[in-house]
Image 1 (cartoon, rainbow, N blue to C red):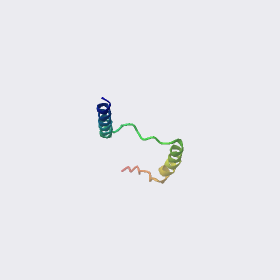
Image 2 (image 1 turned 90 degrees about the vertical axis):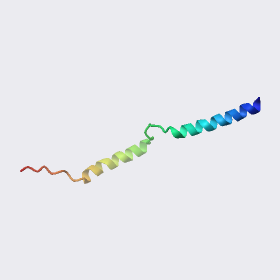
Image 3 (image 1 turned 45 degrees about the vertical axis):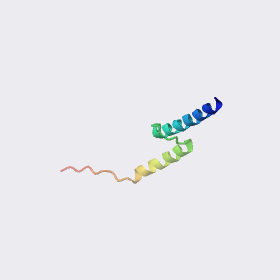
Image 4 (image 1 turned 90 degrees about the horizontal axis):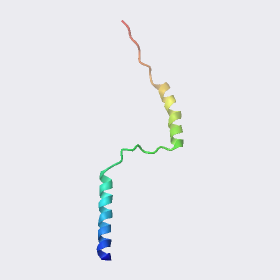
Amino acid sequence: MNRKKKIYETLKKKDKRANAKLHKSNKPRYVSKAQRAAMQDQQPSDEHNTPQPLNETN
């Protein structure tokens, strides 16, 4: 009985891993607090470098 149980458990684990690879999570990737702060510091500097659209009136 133990041999059958062991084989069943290994096959079940293998199926579970294969199924997990098929269904990727929709959850966004974790970004650490330090990385968020760095991104926040970079973001305002990027906004100043972009050209402003011209309002043309005829």
